[in-house]
Image (tube, rainbow, N blue to C red; front, top):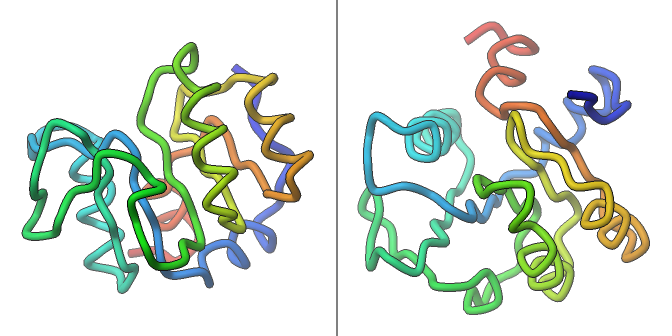
Length: 138
């Protein structure tokens, strides 16, 4: 699967943003959709869970939808199947994040183009944990 064309400096610039809404964050510690945001939280990022099936994840209030979050969001990190992205991206665009990050294995050209047309950077088919460890050696 292809991935975005951002270079390491671009990704480091994205990592300078600290407030991340995680769509599809899991209640289960063995799933990437929990251990990736947990790692990011441990690295100083502010994580906001978005999962309609959970009231709280890792001690943080979980929201049903990204638009229920009242504060501004820098990054929307998505752990949902590629074929379910269009309504997720439509919601995320309304929140006006600087970046939408689609985790490893997630790619939907139509949804990504919608976000880019709204002025939002789109990272796709990359794991935030793996990229952070690769660039910062933690």
